[in-house]
Length: 231
Image (cartoon, rainbow, N blue to C red; front, side, top):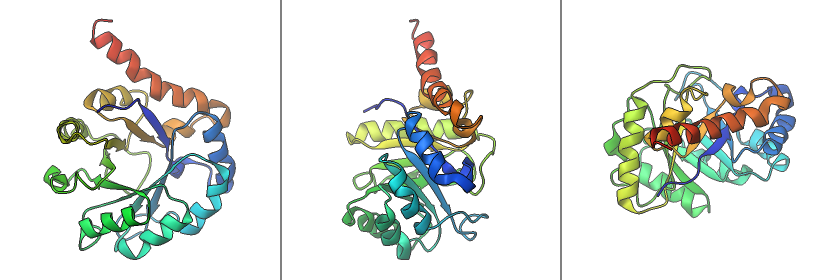
């Protein structure tokens, strides 16, 4: 079940001195989600933001907040991020002791549950969780920092997960995050991704460029598909 391509600008690449304005500008530019990377300096080698920043940003946009928790242990903080205004909460299978219980916790709070797959994470981790999640996030870089180069093996992962999702018959979003730009966007869409989390490719050039940035990411794959099909 393929959805239209949706763009989730990652505020990791935004101007942190003007986050509220940046979120408003991305909303006006036509983004579909606001992607929020939460890092703790432990699970990944960087520290970003916590629930209070999400709560502060929440009044600035009606878009769904796509919150990716790169923290461990993750369970004690799930409720805080839900209360702060997250709409989707994505966790890593190795960020807690019982990933199924963590997912059930997210769902019990009325939020969409996502599962993130790192470059070195085997795909069979999803086998007994597909019935419980709303989103799969394929990391096409090792998490921790923005601006990294795309890891090409992510394309095989996306294609394999697209097959599993389609076979399940469930409406599970397939998101990709890391190194997404005008060149890699058509590739990940062709592999089956339907949500693109992108940082610098969305935020480059300042607010006046955001709408064009989003359109290029959203539109380039459509052109590539048309050419590939002989249209």
